Amino acid sequence: MGAGLRTWLNVGVLSFAFVVIIFYNGMIDGWNRQARHDTRGWEVGAGQLWHPEYDRYDPFSFEEAHAELSPDMQPLIKRDVLVPVLLEQATMYPQGRMQGVVLKGIRADQKLLKLPTGALKSKDDGVLIGKRMARSARLQTGDRLLVRWRDKNGTFDAREFTIARIFDSNVPTIDNGQIWLSLERLQEMTGKVNEATYLVASDAYEPTDKGIWEFKDLDYLLADLDAIIQSKKGGGMIGYILLLIIALLAIFDTQVLSVFRRQREIGTYIALGMTRWQVVKIFTVEGSAHSILAALLATVYGIPLFLYLDHTGLSFAMAENTDITIADTIYPYYSLGLIVSTVVLVVVSATVVSYLPARKITKMKPTDALKGKLQ
Amino acid sequence: MENSFIIQIDHLTKRFPVGKGYFTALKDISLSFGRGEFAGLVGPSGSGKTTMLNIMGSLDSPSQGTARVMGQSVSELSHKDSARLRNRHIGFIFQTFNLLPVYTVFDNVEFALLLQKIPSARRKKMVMDALEWVGLTDKAHSRPNMLSGGESQRVAIARAIVKKPEILLADEPTANLDAENSHHILRTMQKLNEQLKTTFLFATHDEKVMQYLKRKISLRDGRVEKDEVAETINL
Ligand SMILES: Nc1ncnc2c1ncn2[C@@H]1O[C@H](COP(=O)(O)OP(=O)(O)O)[C@@H](O)[C@H]1O
Ligand SMILES: [Mg+2]
Image 1 (tube, chains in turn red, blue):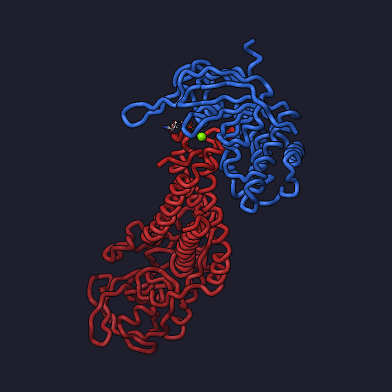
Image 2 (cartoon, protein in one colour):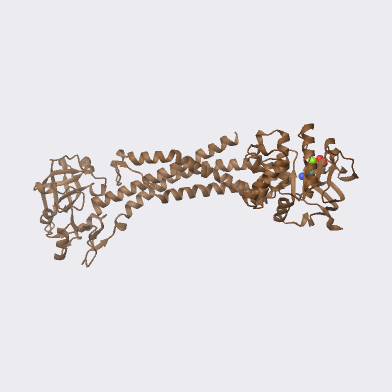
């Protein structure tokens, strides 16, 4: 293989590694941004105030986790700065089957969360469910649904509701196994008048004296989401690290060959008055220039590709059955940090694999190099 | 007395490891060269000419005895100092020309000056002067693969001479050239020797080269057989 062809092959593979690394991480970062944005908009707002007993992963905690809303909270609730939510464990019977659900009471006229709670106003017995819940329980708008729960005294009570609206959200944690209904209705049903389990805060909320309520910030509330998405990042890393390693091996191999083939040139450099370390530097810079060329080549076809994807997004419609927050279409997000760190990673590793074979030059005798007779 | 010699070889022996033992390529050689000489090591292939030239160029060092170049013993020089000695004071010309293929003629000639960190304007003038000496100013921007053998060797001469070194070492410079080109480059070197007072030392077994030498040192099996002042052709 000619040196020119080899060079372009190396540069091609390396540039592909560049594009894949940036593309993959850009997708994950774009997903992360969208998921955080959606989760804020649909579920967590700018933070939440929790009843000290509340544990979002333990439905049995809901029984104890409720308290009265103090009078000084009322104006904040009126202004949508705080949106109280009351939780209650219940059982529903869609088409005669039985399924555990969580009833979630929320004010019909709240505007903070994207939930279409306006639909709860019109009908007395109207409830909201998400598309995942609708699919799994095979429920449609207008269907009647029997729900049974325990009241304050522990005795069972039951009522029929109508599905007023099925909402479409990318956030599965407000959807699966949940029925949203009017806060006043749930308070009345459970006898927990003027009580809530947690309150969703808007950006306007300033944590002051909160009484028993504990403020949970976004870092806390989104930690699980971040962890899931970061783990996806790690999974994909294996793929592109492999690609990068292939590219680096090719550069390494080219360097070994070029140090071998160009002995006479090496000898000439030394005869012209270079030290052997200076020659090592020339070869190392030459090898790492592969990565610079690759970065340039990657921009040539990568930028149009990235811009196109940024415009159209990438369809993930199939992913909507998962329990992870993911949009139908993900718009990748390419941060400066991502691009800079990828360039640094590729250039540094290409320099290292170029240096290792070039180091052999320091062990050469210049007279042998000039004869070109080293093995 | 000592200082008037630019190169002084004293009881030099050079051995190369071969298998379990040694091969002695140079045996107890004592020689000295004054400034401005136009001398040659002559002898059959394998007689030790290249080995001798390499030691005088500080690319190799003696196994025994001393070789002093510009007053410095080559076996005592550090890598850095020996590189500096070559860069500033010694020019090499090889049988195979050894031009750097990816660079232009101009860049090839400029190379040694870059190592010396000479400012660009002065560098440019020095390179063009050197190309003028060898009659190749019009080829400054050609690449080595565009040149004939004779032109390539003239570029190599320009590259060696551009830094005005005290010593120029030429190992079989005509071996890959036809008669006409051989005479051309020899006349060029003769002229440079007269004008710049550069010391020229050849290693050759080419009769054409020998005609030009003012001093001929015959080597045989690593020993000096004859050291004679020669009849030269004058032009
Ligand atoms: N690095 C080396 N290792 C072993 N033998 C060598 C080495 N370099 C030269 N020789 C031997 O030393 C002798 C002289 O070589 P050289 O100086 O190249 O001769 P010339 O240039 O006169 O043809 C030859 O026999 C050659 O084989
Ligand atoms: Mg020889």
